[in-house]
Length: 116
Ligand SMILES: [Zn+2]
Image (cartoon, rainbow, N blue to C red):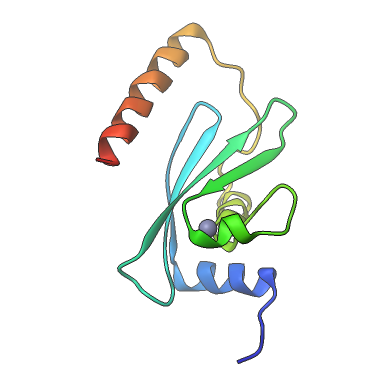
């Protein structure tokens, strides 16, 4: 088996429909991906938009900790960002009002509950 580039791995995930956009809350976009080698394994990704419109990703897959990139990345984070570009998911930072902050707080509580 030949070693794939990151771009090829990302394309495989997108082609297989193995990543799903969940929602955007505030300036964080949430995704869930399925392992292509074992469909029972699912990973969660969070893409955070900073106030200079830069994207940084978090993923709970084991590959992320071995990443030599700076900042660390993985094919799931790459796929999530590629999907945001492809599907027109908001990638620009949006200043939040106080009302929105309350909503964000509620959502993070729900996420903690899901992890139980
Ligand atoms: Zn990952």
